[in-house]
Amino acid sequence: MSSFKTTARAALLAFLLCGVAAPALAQTGQPPIPAILMTPEARDIHSYAQPLVARVTHIDLDLTADFEHRKMTGTAALDIAAAPDAKEVVLDSKGLVIHEVTDAKGAALPWTLGKADPILGAPLTVQLNGARRIVVSYDSAPGGAALQWLTPAQTAGKQKPYLFSQGEAILNRTWIPTQDSPGIRQTWTANILVPDGLTAVMSAERLTPLEGDPVAGGSLYRFKMDKPVASYLIAIAVGDIAFTPLGQRTGVYTEPSVMKKTANELVDVEKMVEAAESLYGPYAWGRYDLLVLPPSFPFGGMENPRLTFATPTIIAGDRSLVSLVAHELAHSWSGNLVNNATWSDFWLNEGFTVYFENRIMEKLYGKPRADMLADLGWTSLQDTIKDVGGPTGADTRLHLDLTGRDPDDGMTDIAYEKGATFLRTIEKAVGRERWDAYLKDYFARHAFQSQTTAGFVADLRANLIKGDPKLEAQIGIDKWVYGVGLPDNAVHIKSAAFPAVDALAAAYAKGGAAPAAKWKAWSTPERTRFVTSLPRQLSAERLAALDKAFGLSAQGNSEIRFVWLELAVANRYAPAVPSLEAFLTDQGRRKFVAPLFKDLMAQGDWGQPIAKRLYAKTRPLYHAVTRQTVDGIVK
Image 1 (cartoon, rainbow, N blue to C red):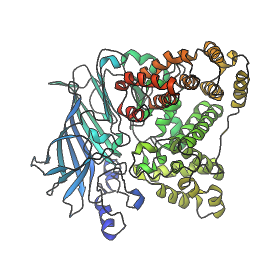
Image 2: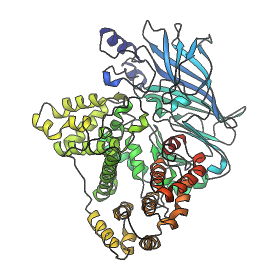
Image 3: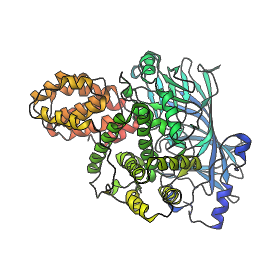
Image 4: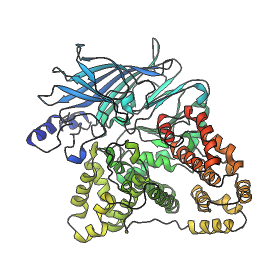
């Protein structure tokens, strides 16, 4: 790895490796490729790249989606910005099948694949021989973790196969040979050939009609992302995909058989974009569309620019789970416009986004609903702190040490909810008006750039604290970002609605009747709060009465069904096992799947046989992200 010390040579390289000079913005209307951060904490331990020697600034993909052999095959042409004395460029690769590497004129370039690491993959080192554009001919990794190939039976329509990708954190190196580091932002284009009858979409501007351009062998789709993005945000899906507009610059893609209910659920998306802009400035990406995927998608959503990928588990039928859309939209500022430079600073993406999401929800749906969501987040944070070693656990820090670890280890509610709580604490200290002005300015000043925790802290002190010792002490910045646990000044947003819900849960636990009338009037957060507030030990009779009153085992709302199944497993409640089996089979969202398998395994001779039987059935249905987590649970 290169030295990240600030030297005269490094300063020169920063100029050379910025890719596009600043005047290009005025000429092209596009942001310049940002310089590589050179401070010690900006060094990415999860990438083999040596960006201060040679870095990728642009990618042109020319690929065929081969459903028969379950691989992407073709070329990636990479533009390289290199120091004058650079002899090679180092790319990230995990399982890629490399056929050859050439320069732009087709002359062969020497290349080697280094020793593979189980987490990082292997470095692909290419001798430049003076080239500043290289072309890699390759196939995606067999069984590569980023891509999931679905049979028709695994889709809603049951007629056509489906492919989708999930790149975060370091999975895109299984299908794209590039520098797979969030601190090395790149522009890109793609030509994608797909079989007849299938539609391709990507996280970029689509340059062809929705039906593609007919060519020999199928349909060709062309895409362009002319703004520099982190490589993990390059995303693709191919399948039986239709489109419905939701507004002038918003719309939804999904399978035709579920389009009507999906579009109905997402009618407020255009309003969400307008609400977000009113808070923190113009939306910078052109269109904001969503792709609602088949149920094996491992996350609630993924903030791929211009095209959020979302799980169908948010389609509850009553628009009660649209906070997830607000979250992914908020990433268009926090995470896409300004992103974490390394995975140790993942909280810069997610903590900001949880805070921003809640502000969008408050603006659109009112403070009571936003407060309920924030209060549920606080409860989740307390549970996570216990899970990661208690208040003194090292993994309760916002800035994490992930040396020798998979970056997924940092994707907990510490990053999400502790990060958001930190920002709420700053808001309380300085006032909302002053805090909003700072955030709006922060996003504008750092647009299309990567950031570190140290960089954010320095910016906060320079542009908000401004040397005020009283304010500095009141917030306690260093304790928040580098310290363990939750500081004493943490702001806990409390819902005014929850005390009454908690009281009814306590009354039911003592033998009272199920509050059927209240349940009917409650929102999803209130219903979720009621179930989670019940004691973990209840009799089979009380559980049966609860299920009968509220139809919990047949619940279509995934959040409510999940907390019910957690309660049922905790009590070894056998009548809920069929619902549990259906829930774990019908969707692969890691947020739901992993905790339920963990709960089952904790139930010894009752739960472990169920877990092992179900996982043998469901594992082939899950994306690699979910499998990796559950493999470590069900043993």
